[in-house]
Amino acid sequence: MVDKETTEFSRGSFKEKILRQLEENAAKQAETKFPDPEDFERPSKSDSEESERKIEPRKVDLEPFKLPVFDFPAADDSEEEPFVENEDLSHESDSLRQKLDGVVSEKAQNQDISPKFSRSESNVQDENLEQNQFSKEKKSEKKVKHQPSRRTNSSSKKASSSKKNKNKNKNKKKKKKKKKVTAGKIIAVIVVLLVLVVGGTGWYGYNFVKSGIQPLDSKNATAKSINIPAGSSSKQIGEILQRQSIIKNGMVFQYYTKFKNYSEFKSGYYNLAPNMSLSTIASKLEEGGTEKPVAPTLGKILVPEGYTLTQIAKAVTVNSGSNEKNAKTPFSEADFMKTVQDPTFIAKMVKAYPKLFASLPTKDSGIKYQLEGYLFPATYDYTKSSTVESVIENMIQAANTQLTPYYDTIAQKNLTVNEVLSLAALVEKEANNDDDRRNVAGTFYNRMNAGMTLGSNLSILYAEGKLGEKTSLSEDANIDTNLDSPYNLYTNTGFGPGPVDSPSLSSIKAVLEPAQNDYLYFVADVTTGKVYFAKTLAEQNANVQKYVNDKISS
Image 1 (spheres, rainbow, N blue to C red):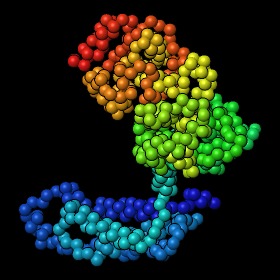
Image 2: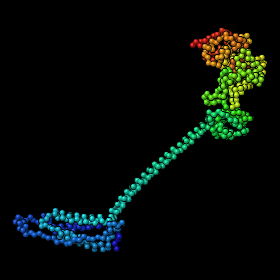
Image 3: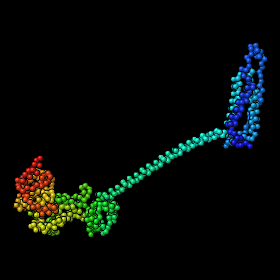
Image 4: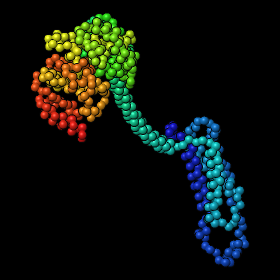
């Protein structure tokens, strides 16, 4: 029994076997039928002539040659079947040899063999035969698909497997590299996203807190009456203010007040506006509200210390509580000046505040404005129902409130309210701090006790309508001391007819509690405002030359 592995041959190996047999047969025929010419002796000339006459063309009888017929599968078969050698392979190989020999002999008979030949010619013929045979076999091979031999198959399989392994390794490496690159990209993207999220959250939080601290509407000064119930926490107050459109965010208010240590909030009614900052609102809540609602304010009027009535008339037209530039109130300067000079209104005020106006000068006393100095400098709110009269009355009421604790002291010193306000108005303009105010007030008292006039330039400037206006240093120094006016305190003794401006509470206190000194003179440096005091006229003249005249000339 022959094993399957030894009986299976590929078509390629079978072809090579046939070609070898053809070459061997051709070589044998060449050796037997075509001897080498060199083995024969060269004949003589006479012999050669005779041989030429006797030699006849020789015919070589060859056995007929038929091509073997093989039963190969059709060319259009989709699958190739391996060639299997039968058990009597040796018998078939002998018959094949005989058939091949027959084919060679038949081919030789069909060709005309010339009497003269050489080894080269026989070789060419053999080669032609082989080439023809090869061409036929190649044509037949093109039509038939054959299976490669086991050796080539195994070697090709090994080569292909090695290539596949290499390709697999390369693909694995590429995949690993791609995985590493992809993982790195994913990590980088995640890190970038985290940075963006953290940064965006921080930026959003910063802007959220920053915007929450700012006023809700910086241009809206319209106040609302807000009720804060008793026992309300900062969180509850923030919610109320946010609901009433006073602040942007109640939570920001809660944390802001805790951070700034605002804690002692009081209950009551508050007039709050959207243009207020959180710190302003918190301060008001600590001050306390009213038991009943008060009309909300529309704006504020600022009256600085030392303002005259004409200056106050201009101030009431400006809404100082608005962030808008040149914001106006509903009041006019003309209405203000008309009201403060109205006898009916003045009589009404005298009746309402008898202690304040107990020594009010009469109109025929030479006074310029009866109510000059009686309107207290401060900041005043006005509402929708406010009028010029109500605004002026609020200023008079504030003066009465500030002086109420000192009415008894004024009476004990044998002074009147008008005298105290008149002297305090001069002190307000002559000094810049409390110590100087008390020394200036003491100097004025020393001069009056000595029978001297007060000798103030301010009263003359007021009489000329220049007090409160911007004047040059030379104008202030070269005043007309001979001016015919009750306000000329160089020629008239006493306190003067009345105040020349609205003094502050500090100046009023300085007049009621003056410094005890021996000064009779003083002069202020025209550039710095510092006051220099003197006991004698010679010292005073030296100070005037040094701190006034020399600086004016330079």
